[in-house]
Amino acid sequence: MRGSTRTLTAATAVLVALGTGAAPAAGSAPAPRPSYAAAAPGQLRDVRQIPLQGAVNVRDVGGHRTYDGERVRRGLVYRADALSKLTDADVGTLAGLGLRTVVDFRVAEEVRYDGPDRLPAGLAATARPVPDNGLFRQLMTVIGSRDPVKQEELLGGGRAEAFMREVYRAFVTDATGRAHFAATLRDLAAGGAAPLLYHCTAGKDRTGWLTYVLLRAVGVPERTAVADYSASNTFRAAYDARVRESLRQAGLMLKPELLIPLQEVRTDYLDAALAEATRQYGSFGGYLTKGLGLDARTLLGLRERLVG
Image 1 (spheres, rainbow, N blue to C red):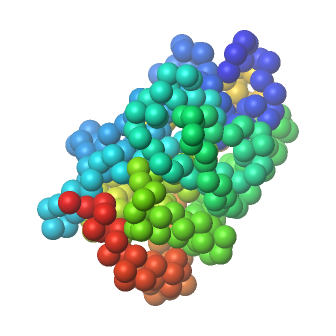
Image 2 (cartoon, rainbow, N blue to C red):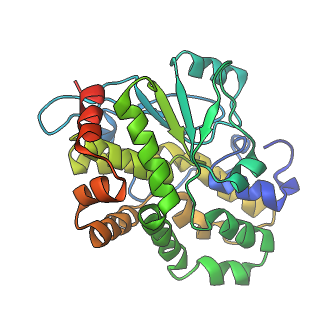
């Protein structure tokens, strides 16, 4: 974000609140409060961040131990937030990863407002939009209104948290989302697509759910998969705190802390998706085989290619 924070437009503010756009000016906010469900330092031991200037939640999915003591191989799968604001140096860093495939889970409305990915020469993103259950439009409505009463009515009193639980249930119930998640897992199982990077806007919800699913599918213990999911709060905390202060200073929100449940990941959101998977398909395994349509050969391929 360039210039005074008071020049923020509603659309720009929405993009920033979603976790995209250039970071607010350094020093524009007080130190962020401790983040809900932030990963503990010990849980981050095996999490390797790819430091970039134009994105804050880019990580190697590898490094985690499986139940049988093996490790998920590094350098094969990456997770990220939006790549549309990368600097030239960032693009060079991505080039050094040797990526063959980039999958973009953003819906068309997000891409239209935020812009396409900035990628190394010769690499184009594969669009596999996963519906966000109206999260982008919800933010447009909330921030664009500039109305503290309406903002409280939409997000206060636990309503933001309830909305996010519905977003996560939709990851399981929406047929398009399931198909696009499954296609990405099949790419990884078949070989030839890796190193592969997938991302959404903030790199925490659609990207976080798929990463959790992938790690569990290859034999990573649930506790470890949850820690990787929760680590988004650690990597995003300072940026998100600056965003809230920018919205306050711009006069767009009197109480930007109402956005915190939308900015963070929380284990009860994850639990909502898992409960829906059990309700629809009987178990997490049923979600993999019936919901995503992954056969035994695909699941074995994931394990063989990604663990060792």
